[in-house]
Image (cartoon, one colour):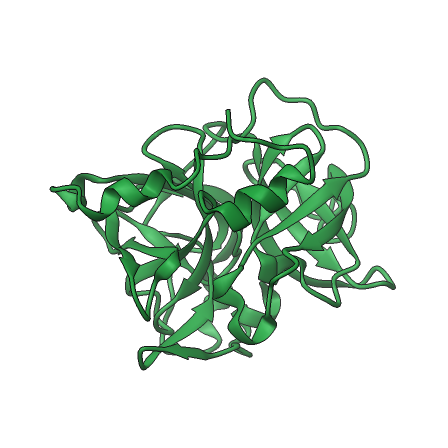
Length: 270
Protein backbone atom coordinates (compact mmCIF):
# COMPACT_ATOMS: atom_id res chain seq x y z
CA UNK A 1 0.00 0.00 0.00
CA UNK A 2 1.34 3.42 -0.88
CA UNK A 3 0.83 4.89 2.58
CA UNK A 4 2.64 1.88 4.05
CA UNK A 5 5.37 1.98 1.39
CA UNK A 6 6.14 5.55 2.30
CA UNK A 7 6.74 4.29 5.81
CA UNK A 8 3.82 6.20 7.26
CA UNK A 9 3.30 2.97 9.15
CA UNK A 10 0.63 2.14 11.66
CA UNK A 11 2.60 0.57 14.53
CA UNK A 12 0.91 -1.73 17.03
CA UNK A 13 2.47 -3.64 19.88
CA UNK A 14 1.75 -7.18 20.97
CA UNK A 15 4.09 -8.83 23.45
CA UNK A 16 6.49 -5.91 22.93
CA UNK A 17 6.77 -6.65 19.18
CA UNK A 18 5.95 -3.90 16.68
CA UNK A 19 3.53 -5.02 13.98
CA UNK A 20 3.09 -3.18 10.69
CA UNK A 21 0.79 -3.82 7.73
CA UNK A 22 2.78 -5.50 4.95
CA UNK A 23 2.57 -7.35 1.70
CA UNK A 24 4.18 -8.45 -1.52
CA UNK A 25 6.60 -11.29 -2.09
CA UNK A 26 10.22 -11.35 -0.92
CA UNK A 27 12.84 -13.68 -2.43
CA UNK A 28 10.16 -15.23 -4.60
CA UNK A 29 9.87 -16.11 -8.26
CA UNK A 30 7.67 -15.01 -11.14
CA UNK A 31 4.20 -16.53 -10.86
CA UNK A 32 3.26 -16.12 -14.53
CA UNK A 33 -0.14 -17.74 -15.00
CA UNK A 34 0.21 -19.97 -11.96
CA UNK A 35 -2.49 -18.09 -10.04
CA UNK A 36 -4.53 -16.03 -12.53
CA UNK A 37 -7.30 -15.56 -9.94
CA UNK A 38 -4.93 -13.49 -7.76
CA UNK A 39 -5.13 -9.81 -8.64
CA UNK A 40 -3.72 -6.38 -7.85
CA UNK A 41 -6.20 -3.85 -6.42
CA UNK A 42 -6.05 -0.08 -5.99
CA UNK A 43 -8.34 1.55 -3.42
CA UNK A 44 -9.81 4.90 -4.43
CA UNK A 45 -11.53 7.57 -2.39
CA UNK A 46 -15.00 8.96 -3.09
CA UNK A 47 -13.55 11.32 -5.70
CA UNK A 48 -11.77 8.51 -7.56
CA UNK A 49 -8.27 9.41 -6.37
CA UNK A 50 -5.98 6.36 -5.94
CA UNK A 51 -4.84 5.89 -2.32
CA UNK A 52 -3.11 2.53 -1.86
CA UNK A 53 -2.75 -0.84 -3.47
CA UNK A 54 -3.09 -4.43 -2.25
CA UNK A 55 -3.34 -8.01 -3.47
CA UNK A 56 -6.38 -10.29 -3.27
CA UNK A 57 -7.99 -13.51 -4.47
CA UNK A 58 -11.10 -14.12 -6.52
CA UNK A 59 -13.30 -16.58 -4.61
CA UNK A 60 -16.09 -16.43 -7.17
CA UNK A 61 -16.88 -14.44 -10.32
CA UNK A 62 -18.00 -11.52 -8.14
CA UNK A 63 -16.15 -11.72 -4.79
CA UNK A 64 -12.52 -10.69 -4.23
CA UNK A 65 -10.89 -11.52 -0.86
CA UNK A 66 -8.23 -9.27 0.68
CA UNK A 67 -7.13 -7.78 4.02
CA UNK A 68 -9.30 -5.48 6.12
CA UNK A 69 -6.71 -2.71 6.17
CA UNK A 70 -6.96 -2.73 2.35
CA UNK A 71 -10.69 -1.97 2.33
CA UNK A 72 -10.98 0.33 5.36
CA UNK A 73 -12.22 3.92 5.12
CA UNK A 74 -11.78 6.19 3.27
CA UNK A 75 -11.76 3.55 0.53
CA UNK A 76 -15.00 3.97 -1.43
CA UNK A 77 -14.20 2.10 -4.63
CA UNK A 78 -11.65 -0.46 -5.83
CA UNK A 79 -10.15 -1.18 -9.25
CA UNK A 80 -8.56 -4.61 -9.89
CA UNK A 81 -6.06 -5.96 -12.45
CA UNK A 82 -5.40 -9.68 -13.09
CA UNK A 83 -2.41 -9.42 -15.44
CA UNK A 84 0.69 -11.26 -14.22
CA UNK A 85 2.68 -8.14 -15.13
CA UNK A 86 0.78 -4.94 -14.39
CA UNK A 87 4.03 -2.97 -14.47
CA UNK A 88 4.79 -3.28 -18.20
CA UNK A 89 1.38 -2.22 -19.45
CA UNK A 90 1.37 1.23 -17.86
CA UNK A 91 -0.29 3.48 -18.98
CA UNK A 92 -2.12 1.35 -21.53
CA UNK A 93 -3.67 -0.88 -18.87
CA UNK A 94 -5.22 2.08 -17.06
CA UNK A 95 -3.20 1.76 -13.85
CA UNK A 96 -3.93 3.12 -11.27
CA UNK A 97 -7.33 4.45 -12.35
CA UNK A 98 -9.18 1.86 -14.45
CA UNK A 99 -8.60 -1.88 -14.06
CA UNK A 100 -10.09 -5.03 -15.53
CA UNK A 101 -13.02 -4.64 -13.15
CA UNK A 102 -14.19 -2.30 -10.40
CA UNK A 103 -16.07 -2.99 -7.21
CA UNK A 104 -17.25 -1.90 -3.79
CA UNK A 105 -15.08 -2.61 -0.71
CA UNK A 106 -16.40 -4.08 2.54
CA UNK A 107 -14.46 -4.56 5.78
CA UNK A 108 -15.13 -7.14 8.50
CA UNK A 109 -17.67 -5.63 10.93
CA UNK A 110 -15.34 -6.25 13.90
CA UNK A 111 -12.32 -4.66 12.21
CA UNK A 112 -10.56 -2.10 14.41
CA UNK A 113 -7.95 0.14 12.72
CA UNK A 114 -6.20 0.50 16.07
CA UNK A 115 -5.74 -3.28 16.26
CA UNK A 116 -6.02 -4.17 12.58
CA UNK A 117 -4.41 -7.61 12.90
CA UNK A 118 -7.23 -9.05 15.07
CA UNK A 119 -9.88 -9.02 12.32
CA UNK A 120 -7.87 -8.10 9.25
CA UNK A 121 -10.31 -9.24 6.56
CA UNK A 122 -12.02 -7.45 3.71
CA UNK A 123 -13.75 -8.18 0.41
CA UNK A 124 -14.60 -6.37 -2.80
CA UNK A 125 -17.95 -7.07 -4.47
CA UNK A 126 -17.30 -6.69 -8.19
CA UNK A 127 -19.42 -4.55 -10.48
CA UNK A 128 -19.62 -7.39 -13.02
CA UNK A 129 -18.53 -11.07 -13.06
CA UNK A 130 -15.00 -12.11 -13.96
CA UNK A 131 -15.12 -15.62 -15.37
CA UNK A 132 -12.12 -17.91 -14.84
CA UNK A 133 -11.45 -21.63 -15.06
CA UNK A 134 -10.93 -21.81 -11.29
CA UNK A 135 -11.00 -19.60 -8.22
CA UNK A 136 -9.51 -19.52 -4.76
CA UNK A 137 -11.36 -21.60 -2.18
CA UNK A 138 -12.13 -21.16 1.51
CA UNK A 139 -10.63 -23.51 4.12
CA UNK A 140 -12.63 -25.80 6.37
CA UNK A 141 -13.44 -24.50 9.85
CA UNK A 142 -10.35 -24.51 12.14
CA UNK A 143 -8.38 -26.66 9.70
CA UNK A 144 -5.11 -24.93 10.63
CA UNK A 145 -5.41 -25.89 14.32
CA UNK A 146 -3.98 -29.31 13.54
CA UNK A 147 -0.67 -27.64 12.71
CA UNK A 148 -0.14 -26.70 16.36
CA UNK A 149 0.93 -30.19 17.38
CA UNK A 150 2.23 -31.38 14.02
CA UNK A 151 5.84 -32.52 13.99
CA UNK A 152 8.20 -31.26 11.35
CA UNK A 153 6.62 -27.83 11.33
CA UNK A 154 9.28 -26.65 8.90
CA UNK A 155 7.69 -29.03 6.40
CA UNK A 156 4.29 -27.36 6.72
CA UNK A 157 4.33 -25.30 3.58
CA UNK A 158 2.23 -22.47 2.19
CA UNK A 159 2.15 -20.72 -1.17
CA UNK A 160 2.22 -16.93 -0.82
CA UNK A 161 1.25 -14.84 -3.85
CA UNK A 162 1.38 -11.07 -4.28
CA UNK A 163 2.53 -8.05 -6.24
CA UNK A 164 5.05 -5.42 -5.22
CA UNK A 165 8.18 -4.76 -3.23
CA UNK A 166 10.79 -7.49 -3.53
CA UNK A 167 13.05 -6.42 -0.66
CA UNK A 168 13.44 -3.68 1.92
CA UNK A 169 16.49 -1.54 2.77
CA UNK A 170 17.38 0.91 5.57
CA UNK A 171 17.20 3.78 3.07
CA UNK A 172 13.61 4.99 3.28
CA UNK A 173 13.58 5.83 -0.45
CA UNK A 174 15.16 2.59 -1.70
CA UNK A 175 11.80 0.80 -1.97
CA UNK A 176 11.13 2.71 -5.19
CA UNK A 177 13.76 0.69 -7.04
CA UNK A 178 12.18 -2.62 -6.03
CA UNK A 179 8.53 -1.60 -6.16
CA UNK A 180 7.28 -3.56 -9.17
CA UNK A 181 3.71 -4.58 -9.97
CA UNK A 182 4.43 -8.14 -11.04
CA UNK A 183 2.73 -11.21 -9.58
CA UNK A 184 5.26 -13.23 -7.58
CA UNK A 185 5.09 -16.49 -5.63
CA UNK A 186 7.04 -17.86 -2.65
CA UNK A 187 6.77 -20.95 -0.45
CA UNK A 188 7.12 -20.01 3.24
CA UNK A 189 6.68 -22.55 6.04
CA UNK A 190 4.93 -22.37 9.39
CA UNK A 191 6.80 -20.81 12.31
CA UNK A 192 4.13 -20.15 14.92
CA UNK A 193 0.40 -20.69 15.48
CA UNK A 194 -2.01 -20.46 18.45
CA UNK A 195 0.39 -18.67 20.78
CA UNK A 196 -1.46 -16.64 23.46
CA UNK A 197 -0.64 -12.94 23.50
CA UNK A 198 1.04 -12.82 20.10
CA UNK A 199 -0.47 -14.69 17.18
CA UNK A 200 -3.44 -15.54 19.38
CA UNK A 201 -6.04 -17.69 17.66
CA UNK A 202 -6.49 -15.22 14.80
CA UNK A 203 -3.14 -15.29 12.98
CA UNK A 204 0.00 -17.30 12.30
CA UNK A 205 3.62 -16.58 11.49
CA UNK A 206 5.33 -17.87 8.36
CA UNK A 207 9.01 -17.90 7.45
CA UNK A 208 10.51 -14.95 5.62
CA UNK A 209 14.02 -15.65 4.36
CA UNK A 210 16.12 -16.27 1.27
CA UNK A 211 15.45 -20.01 1.33
CA UNK A 212 11.65 -20.04 1.53
CA UNK A 213 10.78 -16.51 0.49
CA UNK A 214 8.10 -14.57 2.29
CA UNK A 215 6.33 -11.22 2.32
CA UNK A 216 7.45 -7.59 2.40
CA UNK A 217 6.00 -4.08 2.01
CA UNK A 218 4.00 -3.52 -1.15
CA UNK A 219 0.59 -5.19 -1.32
CA UNK A 220 -1.18 -6.58 1.72
CA UNK A 221 -4.14 -8.95 1.45
CA UNK A 222 -2.46 -11.52 -0.77
CA UNK A 223 -3.34 -15.20 -0.31
CA UNK A 224 -1.33 -17.75 1.61
CA UNK A 225 -2.58 -20.98 0.08
CA UNK A 226 -2.34 -24.19 2.10
CA UNK A 227 0.42 -26.27 0.54
CA UNK A 228 0.18 -26.07 -3.23
CA UNK A 229 -3.62 -26.00 -3.26
CA UNK A 230 -5.89 -23.07 -4.11
CA UNK A 231 -7.32 -23.05 -0.55
CA UNK A 232 -6.67 -19.70 1.15
CA UNK A 233 -5.47 -20.47 4.68
CA UNK A 234 -4.98 -16.77 5.41
CA UNK A 235 -4.26 -13.34 3.96
CA UNK A 236 -1.00 -11.43 4.31
CA UNK A 237 -1.47 -9.06 7.23
CA UNK A 238 1.53 -7.79 9.21
CA UNK A 239 5.28 -7.78 9.68
CA UNK A 240 7.30 -7.74 12.88
CA UNK A 241 9.99 -5.31 11.72
CA UNK A 242 10.76 -2.69 9.09
CA UNK A 243 13.22 -4.67 6.99
CA UNK A 244 11.02 -7.65 6.09
CA UNK A 245 13.21 -10.15 7.91
CA UNK A 246 12.45 -13.24 9.96
CA UNK A 247 8.71 -13.84 9.79
CA UNK A 248 5.52 -12.64 8.12
CA UNK A 249 2.10 -12.40 9.78
CA UNK A 250 -0.98 -13.96 8.20
CA UNK A 251 -4.60 -13.41 9.26
CA UNK A 252 -6.47 -16.72 9.42
CA UNK A 253 -9.45 -17.33 7.16
CA UNK A 254 -10.32 -20.71 8.73
CA UNK A 255 -11.83 -19.17 11.89
CA UNK A 256 -15.59 -18.89 12.44
CA UNK A 257 -15.55 -15.09 12.48
CA UNK A 258 -13.99 -15.13 9.02
CA UNK A 259 -16.09 -17.90 7.48
CA UNK A 260 -19.39 -16.72 9.00
CA UNK A 261 -18.90 -13.22 7.62
CA UNK A 262 -17.91 -14.50 4.18
CA UNK A 263 -21.01 -16.70 4.18
CA UNK A 264 -23.14 -13.53 4.18
CA UNK A 265 -21.75 -12.94 0.67
CA UNK A 266 -22.79 -16.44 -0.40
CA UNK A 267 -19.28 -17.98 -0.24
CA UNK A 268 -18.67 -21.20 1.68
CA UNK A 269 -15.86 -23.77 2.06
CA UNK A 270 -15.87 -26.50 -0.60
